[in-house]
Length: 326
Image 1 (tube, rainbow, N blue to C red):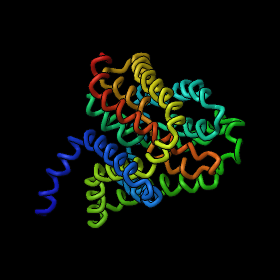
Image 2 (cartoon, rainbow, N blue to C red):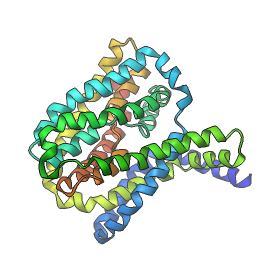
Image 3 (cartoon, one colour):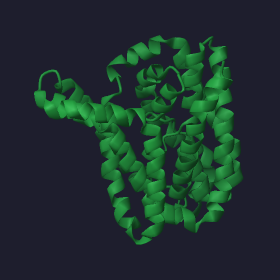
């Protein structure tokens, strides 16, 4: 019990400073990746197990049992789903046409921008004073719906471009989805159900929850350290996709605010909609991008670039958006 008492202040400190810690992980990963590019392949093999552990811990905090209650909040849920699954594709489709000449760029852009975030979106929403708990309750719906519609959007939006150079191999894509999403989600549900009866399950759930921030730091560090040599080697790719991601990040907060006003939502809810529409599920879709064929080898570079752009934009957004959304 003394260990738990000593650990609690550390956990609280990490949660309070997590944005700074995440940005520090990005910088550390970039320095490590550029200083030791030969270690990239080894670091890349560690991404999947660490990310799976992060998602397991994330899903432990997702109230799947309150999914019905989330849909009972009809106006907010309708606005949230409309922003992420109707408006976002409408915004992404014309942006993606600017990289439609290269299948790897196109599929990577679609993959990362069409998937709404279900983890650190709550962090930034909470820091900005938004209704983060609303997104937390709705996160099972966001996760499940994107799992169903993302392959369809990719097939429709990529079109013939996705078939160039060997096309999308759906088998490894499906395998990555099962390992990185379905398995952690299923284990988290089993753990939560067992926790009231088994002390070991309850301790596991508490420990995993306490490790959320360190796991996020480790994931960001590994992703950036393993991929930044590839990103640095293709400045042409970065130059093409960064303007798209910046444009997306500028448009979506306004879209979330307008959608919230149309749904007669308060300021906190509109902030939540703005952050949900802007933040993307880049860490979850990265293994899917890595599972694509070699002909689409630029897709992971696109996903990592979006992560770097988004975290910088969100660090600014937590200060700026509360002043703009009144």
